[in-house]
Length: 183
Image (cartoon, rainbow, N blue to C red; front, side):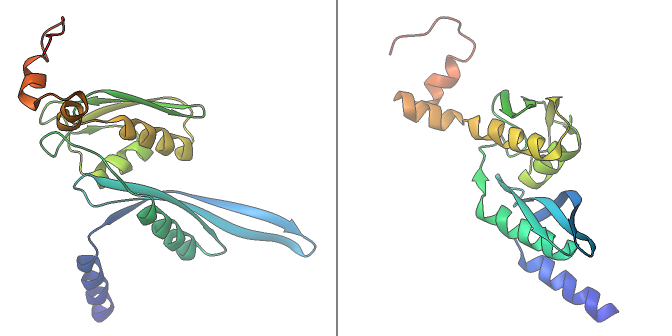
């Protein structure tokens, strides 16, 4: 028993990613002899340093569905710029289908204030301070997709400054000004 646990610990240390099972769904297909059951898994994978992805896997057995979902999540990872490695740079809104989410940056010490599927995304992403509100559906698939839609909108001051042809210090200085300064 102890050797099996040791092997599991070794395998976890080798992997740079943290994965969280968000939702498991049992589905059935009615056939001539009765019902055939299958399982669908929704998994979120991240490195807790700004990269995160989600995946969906289906199989006849739960572990196989989770493995497929994890592989899919690793293939679809996105990079999200974080402020001080703990929160977002600015507030964002995302939607997918009937799922709508609002993500707000928070001061240090706030923690993750978010519902189930969104919490899993933020924990694997490495965000420590955020306030999130889900509106519309409570379907975990649509909530996760809406969260990813919002995270794709996230921009760092460095990328905004590069796009506008400004220096980051000029952009930061204008943060409080209402009227734009001509460069």
